[in-house]
Image (cartoon, rainbow, N blue to C red; front, side, top):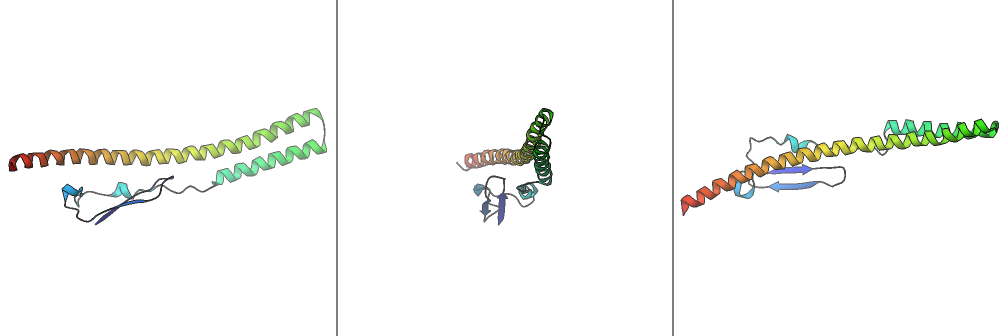
Length: 141
């Protein structure tokens, strides 16, 4: 019996068990075909990657030093620089989180693309099998 598992970042595991792998009518897969593609799984992505943590720390540090500078030296240029630093640090953190999301989406896209290619090949194989079965039925009649 074969178990095929497909995992994506947003779904749970789907398992299909085929009891008779030689029964083409039931969708069996010949034993010589590789199932490497089914075994490739998406990696889990941590809630916060190391780059996100570093970016977040620098964002907090930039806001902290900016606020401290505005308190210790209250002047117009310090307020302008402090306000800009307070905005740019968190924005850099936001950008880093979006980069992480893009990387996860690219990985998911590649997994879906592999699955579509596999299903396309399976569709071709099934169409050929249907043709062969139609020929067999015609010969039997």
